[in-house]
Structures are given as C-alpha cells and as structure tokens.
Amino acid sequence: MSSYRQMNLHSHTFRCGHAEGDTVDYAAEAVKNKMLLLGISDHTPFPEKRDENTRMEPEQMPDYIAGIEKAREKFPELQILKGLECDYTEEYLPFYQSLRNTYSLDYLIGSAHFYYENGERISVFKEPVNHKRMNAYMEQVIGAIDSGMFLFIAHPDLFCLHLERWDDYVESCVREICREAEQKKMPLEINVSGYLKGKDGSAPFPKDEFWRIVSDYDIGILINSDAHTVPCLCQDKEKGYALQQKYHLRQWNPAFNERKL
Image (cartoon, rainbow, N blue to C red; front, side, top):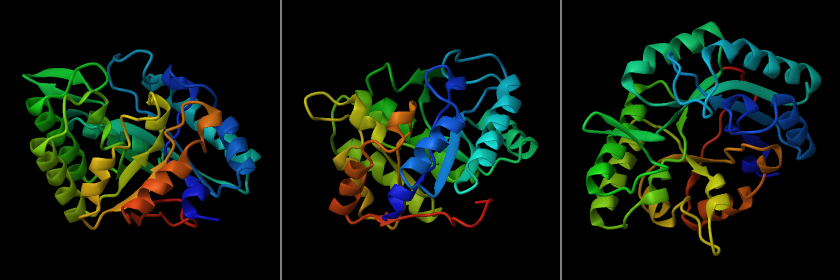
C-alpha cells in the first residue's frame, strides 16, 4: 500500500467549532481504510479569547488530549499522534511551545490562515490577494518555516483561494517560499481539502502552478486531507497523489515506529 494512503497528519475534531467527530471516530475510519498513522491536529487555541467558532479554547485542551488517549486505547493497532495546527505569528510562539511541553504533543503544524497589512490581520478566506498582500502572505509562511517549531507547513498555496491573478510577481514569491523550505528542509503539504471547494471541476488549491514551481526544488511533500468530517479523512487523496506524480515531487514520511517526530 502506498504511504500516502497509510497516514494522515492533518485532521480536526468538533472542538474547533467548524468540524465534526472526535478522535475515536477518525481512528475507526483510519482502521477501516488500513491506515498506519493518524495525526490529530486541531486548531490551536489562542491565549486570549479570539476567533470563536474556528478554534478551541485553552481550557478544552485536557479534554482534547483525553479524546486522543481514549482512541489510542481502543485502537492499539493504529499509531495516533497528538498535534496542533498553529497559525504562525511570532508573538504566540512561546505559547505554542508551552502547549507542546505541557501536553507532551508529538508535533505542531505551521499554517497561515491570515497575514498582516498595516498592522491589521487579514484573512485569506475573505479578502482578494493582490501583490502587496501576496508579499505579506509570503513573509508569514517564511516566518513559520524559519521558526523551527513546526513539523511541516500546511496548505502553503492557501492564498490561491482569492488570488487576483497568477503572474510573475506571485511566482517570485512562491520561489522565495520554496528556497526557504529547501534550505530549512521543511516539508510542504499537498492539502486535498481544496478539491472540496472547487466548482465546475476546478479547485482553488492544490494549485498546479504552485506545485510546478515546488518541483524545481529539493522539498519533501506529504499528502493530507485536512479532514473536518470523518468521511473526508481519506477523500481525494488519490488526486493529491496524481499531482505529486505529475511533478515528480519527493514523498516525505515520518518514522512510523517513533512516537516523537
């Protein structure tokens, strides 16, 4: 069985407010699909109450961990890792590290669901991305890579959701991200959840143009579903694999027999 089918390191539970199911439900689906490695990586809480309905609160962390431990006990044949998906921002790095230490997390994922423009936080889900914003997004992703805190970068092409146009400037920004990822040996994620957002057979991401550029660099990639519902855990991963094969991208895998990555 191909390794991309055997693992998924990006999945969310009901605690983030916009997903369904708990770890035990995802574990059952993983076992049914003969997976070997399941990573649970809910959106990290922020130290202050913020972004309601998109992430859990800090006081929910013990229950989150308990849910993972319960699934480990029920499905000992499946390796289940404790993770969090963290929106990169420099001020929160100490908080993320404290969560990792306090709850003995196996890994943290770096992501950029927002960037900053004139000190204001801009969501990639709401605003069109012009050249200025593309540069801000690029700096956000490079900051996550340079922090050294994350196992991989989730959906690095998420900016394509509302990109005004793909042009030479956008390509230059993508190459800056790739150069940094190559230098720091940071894996990038082909996130197949974008296929669920497509219309008329198209998808905003994974973006072909982005991964064509990635193929010019020595960067490991992994394919994750970013599942927010249990049925999506294994959905569309074949499409991600086809994209990987199209551009001859190097598969990256963690060691299956090590709890700490």
